[in-house]
Amino acid sequence: MDFDIPDELQLLARTVRDFVETRLAPMEKQVEESDEIPSEIVREMAALGFFGLPFPEEYGGAGAGDLGYCLALEQFGRTSAAFSNLIGAHTSIGSMSIFLGGTDEQKRRYLPDLTAGRKLAAFSLTEPSSGSDAASIQTTARKDGGRWMLNGTKIWVTNGPIADVVVVYAANDRAKGARGGITAFIVEKSFRGFRVGRVDEKMGLRGSKTGELIFEDCEVPEENVLGGEPGTGFRTALGALDIGRVSLAAGAVGTSQFLLELGIAHAKRRTQFGQPIAANQAIQWVLADSAVEIHAARLMVYDAAAKLDRGVRVPREAAMVKVYASELANRVADRVLQIHGGMGYMRDSPVERAYRDARILRIYEGTSEVQRMIIAEELLTDAPSR
Image (tube, rainbow, N blue to C red):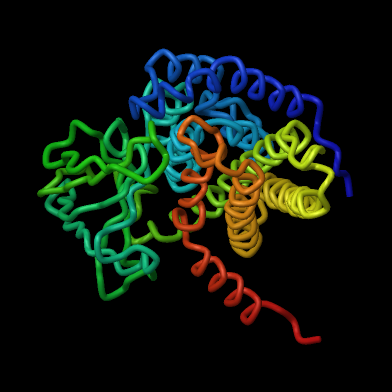
């Protein structure tokens, strides 16, 4: 088994790392205070191809595949989560839904603008009454001549308030549920009957726009049924979420690594009782445990991403790496904040921001509990007897 990262992907990771350190890290405080990513930064990200990393060049993408994409997201994890959220929701699940489930015509029509960052995408599944139980969505899709009419409300849609294109999942037949009763639609923000509702104020993720999307007899042309076939949406959603979970885990690894480095530097620098606190075994073991777990999580990410690039379905691996890396990031954030003591609790500390940002990792794109359900189901269904 070859564990070497190809040279071109190592170069991609270094390029992203340089951009994070020189352009994004200096903007963290401004983004946190204004709750906005400056438009010039978004344009720079687009110019560097960051919105199309995993997609083939024929659709305007960078052709980096899922492994290259995860290497990039790992580096984006070293700064404010606003930036990785913008890219992740756009790429991993928004544009990816079109790439995975769209017809050739739909891909040609939408992906070039999306991969170039000229337009932003969102993925709209969660509703007030259906979060983890995604198959029970209440938003309806009714055929009306040569169009479909969508009615319902979606909540907590990352990029929703600013997206140009939203992939919306709606029930065309509630009786069928996930087995033929859910259809995905490509909805443009200009479509009649579509509007943005409440924009959310969150505990963390400052600068990442999340909100409510409302569909009131929203008119969607028949050619915007994703894949051209009603009832196939849930399968597309699951495929996109697998990729989303792996890439989200990559960002969590990057965040954990960055926090560990902050913890090491502070432990060496901070002196108490006449010696650096790094001399204390209690501190050493916290750092060592974090390093071990980060190494394991990173290898899990790379393994799952490499399998995706080979066309292998990874529902079990995606769930495993998502639950492990997201819970790891929360543990590391807590440990490193404790190492920093009162300084880590102050608003101007990057540890304080990372602590708040990390909490959502165990919730969105599938809670930790749901990931464990998926893992258990895969084990009990597919595992051979021994």
